[in-house]
Image 1 (cartoon, one colour):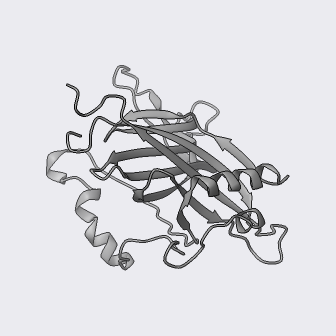
Image 2 (cartoon, helix red, strand yellow; image 1 turned 135 degrees about the horizontal axis):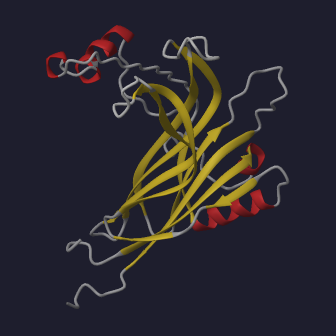
Length: 264
């Protein structure tokens, strides 16, 4: 902070559901050198290699506890196009005007935040949903009564923002967008009930299917630039979905020095 001054950074974030025609009408250089056509991925491992690489981190050392330890992991890796580009304030305004004039496009604005140089924050619009996902013995009861295990899962949007003003008064920005949703909620029966009640010796718990999509981006921005991330809609041909929409988020930072670096 001493090298770049006592800056503060203000962030304005907009989530946009836009038609591809509206995006195409904006004067943006959608070129190979400006846009990453696919999401960058870590080097892929074979399923067996991945399992072996993570084996020690999944299960604790069995010598440390007398209890049986069990974990479950389920991983899917969908592939979808992801575009990212730096645009000027004029292009940002043109994009917003095009979307506002389009009946099928929508713009949602997150609360603006102002941070000190080098600080980070989370902006979240989430609902927390509780589920009974297991049972355990109640140690305070002598009759072996079971109590439910409650797991709270988030559903919504969360974005992390971090920026540092450099010596040349540019902004090194890092963003992470997380989209969480809960799909079908299945149930499972556990053999922990009592035979003398209506449960037939079974205890029913919930098994929600939760999905989280995480998009990370970073780069250097000049004073008049914004960061635009575009994820075109994936669709199956010959179905009702047209495939002419895209989910976008636009991050517009502004940075200023409220106190001159020469003053102490």
